[in-house]
Length: 210
Image (cartoon, rainbow, N blue to C red; front, side, top):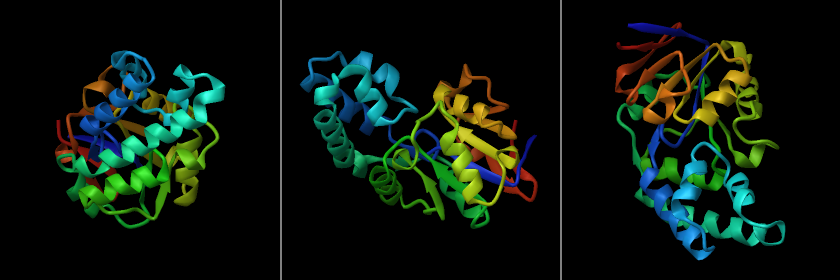
C-alpha cells in the first residue's frame, strides 16, 4: 500500500475520471481531415492540452477562431458518448465536499457536458481552459484550484494521465502526483495505477493499493 499525503486532491478530467478517448479521436480526426491535416499528427499533441493551443499549432492566426469554434462544436457533439472510468465514481463520492477539484484543459461547457454524461459528481471547484491564461504544462490551473479550495499547492495531490498535466503539477510544486494509465508512465509520477479502483480516500490523502 502506498500512501500519498495531502489535504486536497486535484483531478484531471479526461483519462482520469472520464473515458473520452474515443470521443476525442472522433472529433479531432474529423477536424484534421477538414483542414487537410494528418489525424495522427494532430492526435500526438492533443492530450492534456487546451484545444486553443492545439489549434494554434496547426492553423494560421487568421483562421484560428473559426477552426477553434469547429473543434469545440465537434467535441460537444461527441460528449454524450463518454463513460466514467472504473473507480472514479466511488472515489469521488468518498472524498469530502470541498476537499477536491477538477482541473481540465477542456473548456467549461465541454467539461460539464462530459461529467453530466457520466453521472459523476460535480465538484464545487472546476478550473477549465476558460479560467487560465496559460494551459498545461503551465502550473496556473493547479495553483488556482488549490487556492480556491483554501489550500496551498504543497498540500495537494494531483491525479493525472498526461505528461503535460504531470509537468504542470510538478511546476506547481504539489505534494504528490498519482499517474493514471499508460500515458502517465513515462512522466515519473509518485505512484501509477491503471484506473482509480486501486485508490481510496482517507484522512491523510489517498491510499494506493500496490
